[in-house]
Image 1 (cartoon, rainbow, N blue to C red):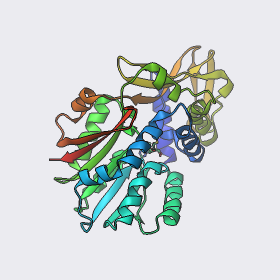
Image 2: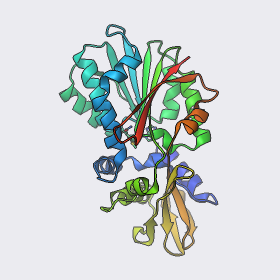
Image 3: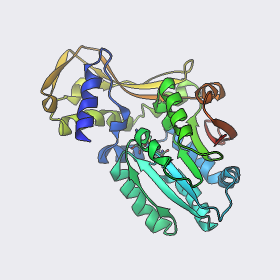
Image 4: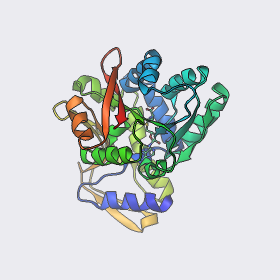
Length: 315
Ligand SMILES: C[S@@+](CC[C@H](N)C(=O)[O-])C[C@H]1O[C@@H](n2cnc3c(N)ncnc32)[C@H](O)[C@@H]1O
């Protein structure tokens, strides 16, 4: 893991346009900061998707078309703290559905906390956690022939560029069997005054989350980033529907990463791209799903129409 981290950081910071992979936000500190983000007044995404999971649980279950006595696997990619999923697990468990919950996440800390909470709150639910990058874990899904429902919530797919999202959807589709389902949560394109504050809150939690990448590089790869000399600058365009977070160098400066035995130069105003958060509409989703074997069965919206959970079925 440490070698992959080191190599990815080296590749990202050596490029002409510097970038850092967003999956490295999530260590113990990053997980806790993300929980704080989900509770921020500006971060509408979690509240909107929770509204769907809380108030349309039975619609979700009906659309999945699974009989209570048919054993199935409920697989979640990038499960995080599972707050929304718990609403679905509660009903499935109370109605005695035969299933196993398989959360997959890159953060072992997030998985362990989720497992502990579920064992207390929903002891009947069988949980098998799996740590790893969901791009790699997809392959392993093919080994099981049980019916599958894959949850990919929180607009996690928005962290991928469109070409990457197409490849991801096509790999996911290949890992599934006919009639398996995907529940895909996506944030919808909306005006800047709603979107941008979600990535630039007044209390500075999203800034701390973004800067956690530099903290991790400092502490895990013996680097000397001076966090006082960088700024957090998210951008969003309603035309493209794409939000991007950057860390910008406030001055000309050098940063040495001990574990790489290498010094990186940053010019004043130079950007490090740290996260993409693509927003969707039906057309964008249609082009991502095109050429895959996944078809839209239904689309569930929250009461503000900010967020959509699509239920997809493998043909
Ligand atoms: C934005 S949070 C969303 C959590 C949850 N899906 C939700 O909707 O509340 C993203 C989660 O995905 C995990 N994650 C991010 N990139 C990942 C990757 N490439 N592979 C596996 N997990 C990843 C993170 O550790 C984190 O728990």
